[in-house]
Structures are given as C-alpha cells and as structure tokens.
Length: 291
Ligand SMILES: NC(=O)c1ccc[n+]([C@@H]2O[C@H](COP(=O)([O-])OP(=O)(O)OC[C@H]3O[C@@H](n4cnc5c(N)ncnc54)[C@H](OP(=O)(O)O)[C@@H]3O)[C@@H](O)[C@H]2O)c1
Image (tube, rainbow, N blue to C red; front, side, top):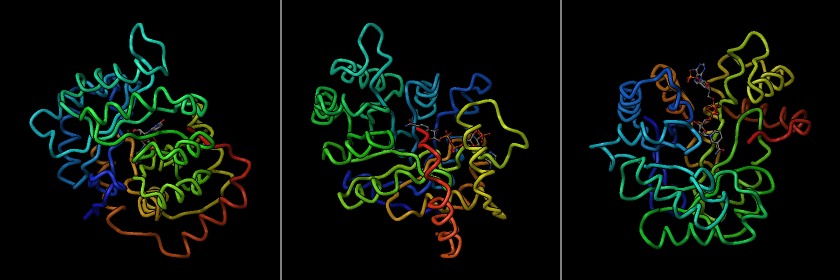
C-alpha cells in the first residue's frame, strides 16, 4: 500500500506518490487515455495530481476526467503567467489565473495553488503573494504554495507566506535538501518533483531535450551502478524525511504501477541511502539545480 501523509499543516492528506500531469498535455493522448490513467492512479491509492497552465491541455483534460470524482482528489496547479491581456507576475494575473484554473479544472475550489517558478524579487514585492492569500481567504484555494528551486525557494519558505512547497529532489539533484529540512521544521507540506531525474537510465545515447541531456550526463558521472535505479529514485524521494508526496511524471499506467510498487516497498536500506548522499556530496556541487 502507498502510505498517506498530512500535507504539512494544510489539513489535506496525500498519498506518498503523486501523479505529475506535465505529460498529460501530449497531443498523442486522448481524453480517454487521461481518464484511464487517473482511474488506475486512484485504484493504486494515488490521490494527488499536479498540473499547470503551461502543460498544454493538461488542466482541461484533467478537469473532464475529474468530473464525478473531484472529492477523491487533491488537485494541485500553478499560477503566475499565461492570462491573456494581463502582465505576468502581477496581482491581477494571480487572481485571474486562479479563476482560469477553476474553470479549466471544472471545480469550485483548488486544493493547492503554487506560484510557478516565481522569482525571489517578485516574492519580495508582495503583490502576488497577497493576491494568492486573498484567494485562500475567499475559499477558492485551500493551500497557498510555492514551486521553485535554489535561492527563490529558500526566500519563499523563509517568508512564512506558504503552507506547501514544491521543489526538485532526486538522486541526481539534492541541492534543495537543506531548504526542504527548513520547510519540514516549519510544518510546510513538501511536494518533490523530477524525482526520476527524467529517468536517464533509459537512454543509450545523450537525448536531445536539454533537461534530459543534463540528467543523462550526470547519471553517467555519478557512476551509481544501481540494480533498479527507477525504484531506488522513487524510494529515495518519496521516503525522504521532509517529503509529503513525490510526483512521478508519466503518461503510462504501466510506469505508474511500477512506481506504486516501489514506493510501497518503503524507505531505502541505510547503505543505499548513504551511497546516494555521499555520491551527491562528492560530485553534485558541479551540477547546478534543474528547475
Ligand atoms: N513546478 C515545476 O516547475 C515543475 C517542473 C518539472 C516538473 N514538475 C512536476 O513534476 C512532475 C514530474 O516531472 P518530470 O515529468 O519532469 O520528471 P520525472 O518524473 O523525473 O520523469 C518523467 C519521465 O520519466 C519517464 N518515466 C516514468 N516512469 C518510467 C519508467 N518506469 N520507465 C521509463 N521511463 C519512465 C516518463 O515517461 P512516460 O510518460 O513514458 O512514463 C517521463 O518522460 C511533472 O509532471 C510536474 O507535475 C513541476
């Protein structure tokens, strides 16, 4: 069974494995494919789905797939850009972005809404944070969240304005770990993203997509020699002490089932966990964070 945990102090309960819907805007997928994937996720005990307006048709497709089962899900999305006629990273862009997401996702409230890679200086200006807080007060959003990495993530967690945060954490990218620890001490819910580091072990040659290529090069440099890298990556992130839920980005029910089995197997053996920490400490300082 996939464990359930509190999402920090948000009052929401989430499965330790969440479905990252970044790939669900893929034009090769149909509405039916998305419905089937969501159905299988629910059967496996996954109850959080994470989307964003920048993921193509993902929000709209999920909205249609969630009809009739909205209450079974913790729905997470993002704002900050992409509202026609409104400048990005302004108060009105947040307010209207929430309305846009409510419409696309076919719901009366959103469980988690992140400021999606919001720069530190925008956070410090206060306007977008105030607009998101207003949406929480109005009952349109349950938990105000920040999604991002490195310094901006630290500024967000330190600000005390957010109940939930989302950041990269994988065996090939542990830069955010100290900030995740801070978030845990402050009772924030923590959503880990990119936990498979885009599964670089599946490529024989360097892939073309820049983020996949970076992870592929790191994977080779890391020389981890793991028997089951996929399972190790999922157990590492989903059972990290600060993490509430780890997202797997997948369009495949088969991959989701494999991920559910890995997370249900529990935390990594101490020896493997120590190897991952040591190898990142030795080689990871040369790898910049990937957002
Ligand atoms: N807030 C942000 O800025 C941000 C940024 C990045 C990601 N995210 C969130 O995090 C989620 C996950 O991120 P991600 O998709 O970039 O990274 P990821 O989960 O590390 O990797 C996903 C990739 O791994 C493949 N994969 C999954 N299981 C596999 C398996 N068993 N064998 C082979 N390949 C497998 C997937 O392909 P298949 O589809 O074929 O399974 C997909 O291409 C996103 O969907 C999104 O919700 C947020």
